[in-house]
Image (cartoon, rainbow, N blue to C red; front, side, top):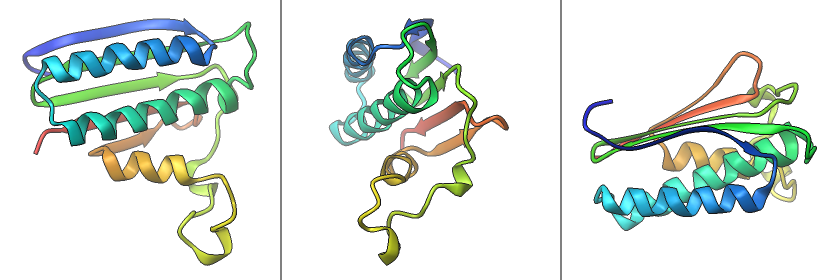
Length: 137
């Protein structure tokens, strides 16, 4: 990533309040890098979903676990990597929330949002790490 303006690479406690604080700082840094409100909003929703998934589903809200978070921000692109300590999942097995039979099913909407707002959403083979990229249009 060229001309990186801010980066973060740490393990955070498996706690949604810590995740919210980190997300607030990411938003500040995106605005400093002059990202549009639309993009900031989309990245915020995507990262919030990924963090909540890692904390609640990946680590099963276990306070003895942590989440490894990497953010790299520049004026042209954003890289986000979130890894939990859980067993992982297969994203292809998550039901499509837009199908009629799944409209009342709560799972899958967050993954759909992430794909809609980010340029790239990729999971490692184990399914306990998501890598998201956003490239400025």
